[in-house]
Image (cartoon, rainbow, N blue to C red):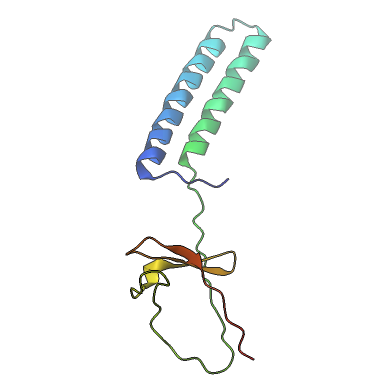
Length: 123
C-alpha cells in the first residue's frame, strides 16, 4: 500500500489508530467481563480485542521506502555541454531536468517554461 503522508500526518494517523485501538480494547473488555457465560458476548469481546491488536499492528508498520535510480547509457562519443532554456536562454541546473516514463523534461527555474527534450536525428 503506497503511502504519501508526511511526518506530521503520519504521526497524527498513529495517534488516531491508538485511540481507536484503545476504544475497541475497552469495549472488548466490557463484553468479556459482562458475558456471564454467554458465548456470543465472549466471541464479540475476543473479536474486539483482535481488532484492537490489528489497529496497533497497522499503526506500527512503516511504509516501504523505494529508491529509483535511472542510468542512461550513451553510445559513441559524448560531448558535455551546458544546457540552455529554449525560451529565455538561461543555463539550466540539474534541478530543472527530470526523467518521467523514460522521457527527459525541462522546467526552467527562471522563466517557468516547461517542455520535453527530444533528440535530433543525426544522419
